[in-house]
Image (tube, rainbow, N blue to C red; front, side, top):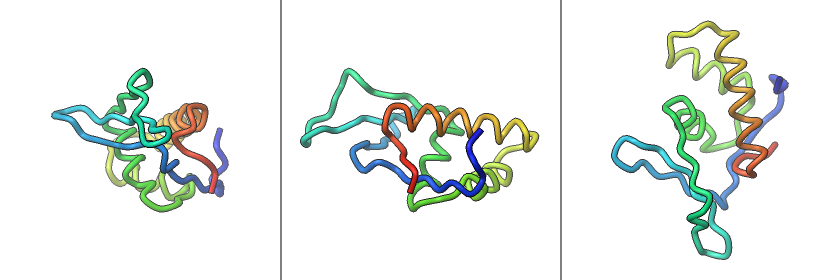
Length: 96
């Protein structure tokens, strides 16, 4: 599980776009989009990405999600940790 004090930030090599009802992340390398690696985010993932406009701690992200969604804090914490882990694995977010 991600530590509450850990701070994360977006990798500027990823572009976030909302297309109709979908939120997508597209990695760019040398100013070229890698169309083989487009990631679709659900509503919660898109919300986390938007909250990462500046570096944010896990605790800050969790508090924002708790204010936005009607879910148990333990569920939000687990989902947030999983999301940050997945995004870190593809290089979309990194520890600040």
